[in-house]
Length: 176
Image 1 (cartoon, one colour):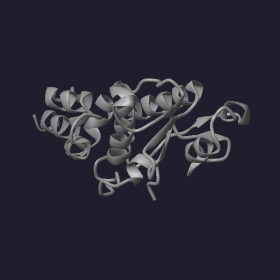
Image 2 (tube, rainbow, N blue to C red; image 1 turned 180 degrees about the vertical axis):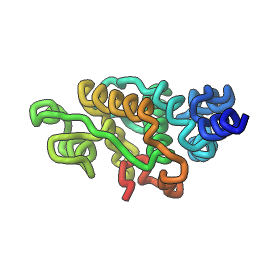
Image 3 (cartoon, rainbow, N blue to C red; image 1 turned 120 degrees about the vertical axis):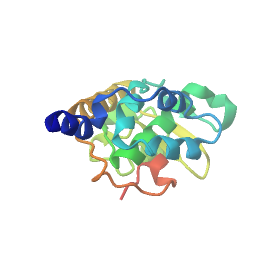
Image 4 (cartoon, rainbow, N blue to C red; image 1 turned 45 degrees about the horizontal axis):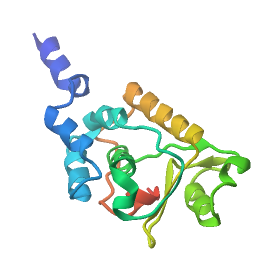
């Protein structure tokens, strides 16, 4: 009996996420995105699988601020921000100089900012201008695969995941 109780207590991430969490995650990028991220982060590491299920490749390129971007683009940006908030980490994808050459100098800068050499973030944000740059599709697929592997590995542990306050670092990828 004690073993059964311990199994219930020690395996909180094995149960499916609450439907309320799924609704909040599906709505990331809509109204009150910072509040939604805080609500999601309240679920701790149990939110990672729900967030990862929402990751999709966004058409590579430059996106201006506002309604012109559409919900898909905003949603992707805020899902990554929520993952950064909960897990306290980021993943990168490989991109050749040739793939990145199609972007403006600012786009190249913001995609590579804080990324290891030869890699890019899934998106870069020119915060002062509100311009988003989504990485080449192959790089985005690598990032999504890394997040899926991370979710499956159960490496995220609530007691160890750093929780920075909500700020622009969650959008720009500056988690240090």
